[in-house]
Length: 333
Image (cartoon, rainbow, N blue to C red; front, side, top):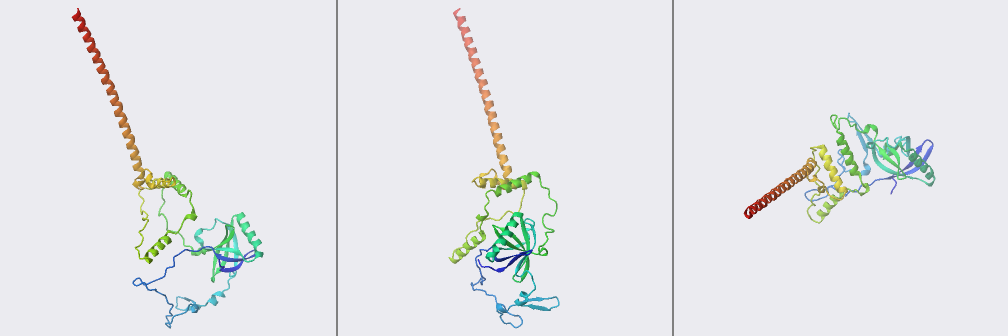
């Protein structure tokens, strides 16, 4: 990795020479602008609207125009000469609890390496002290002529710097979210907690990948080979929730099915959708119980009737035998 900044961390009278390295990189397919009709490359030119000439990048400067039409032109030298104490230092302002900083304030991330062998001991001392105390540091740093706040913390044994937005650069979240107080039933809270726990089982962040980039690469490959675009694989998300409780239950059933190796269709009622899955399963179970009761009742009544008929036949046969004996006795006399 190539260092993008060199300076020192300062806190109190301690100074630690460090180098700054970008901690992240984005995997994006390089696309450029073309004319949709014929595929011709479209290039942007920097043209001065006063003289009409194309301006080289080295001849560009920064400008600011006020409300009265006056313009201030600022060159790179002007910006480089601004009296900022954080040009070559990471100035530690305070140490705070690591969880006190809202992630919405964080921007880019950088790794810090020691600038020389003599900096190893103070670097390790600051790192270990921050880990043992559960602390992070609020600092200031100037990158590309712009001063910004930064959060200094420890990540995997390395001092890591996150540039931050200034407090007045973060927009307030007023007038967002539910417009009124919403009543949540205890049953719904329990089901939501169960769903969260189920979805979190065996989660592996490192196994995730950028599906958009994969789809984009397949599309580009198809176009290069003159083939049609691949068919979409995923459907859009539902835009309505009819019954929150039923939707939670259906989600739990589907998640449990995936966890046990089966699909959503292996769960009772999951094919009926979020709103009707639970009800369909209950109706099916109730129908089976009713049918079983009716069958048992028929079997029982049929058995009793059979026993009664057999008893009547036996009694009638006995009476016939007794009558036959009496008749034989009379004839004999």
